[in-house]
Image 1 (spheres, rainbow, N blue to C red):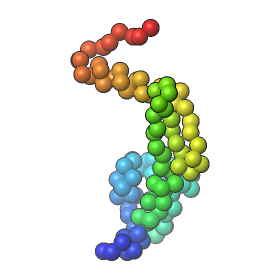
Image 2 (image 1 turned 135 degrees about the horizontal axis):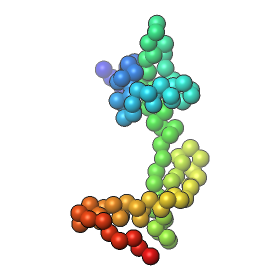
Image 3 (image 1 turned 135 degrees about the vertical axis):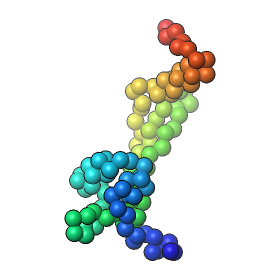
Image 4 (image 1 turned 90 degrees about the horizontal axis):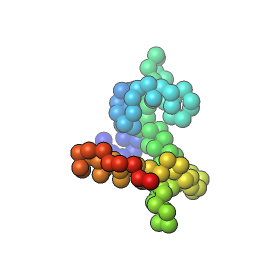
Length: 110
């Protein structure tokens, strides 16, 4: 199957959810909210691979560490804007990694 044919290939709900790495309930929610296009054949919803790729492209985000204070910024590819991570995920992840490495909880800083 060449690339053009693959774009129009229809996937069942189960395969579409696997393709996106989400559950079927989440896929139903995204479909109901109009965020993922589908084709209705009888009682079944079928998802073109092209629609799933489009969803991925329009929702693609990238985490960018801020070199000044160690916070992680989230870059929205659609708007090219950033949001500060209010939980300071970078420090939380470092703490989890250290705790897993040493096999015990570390005392809280400060």
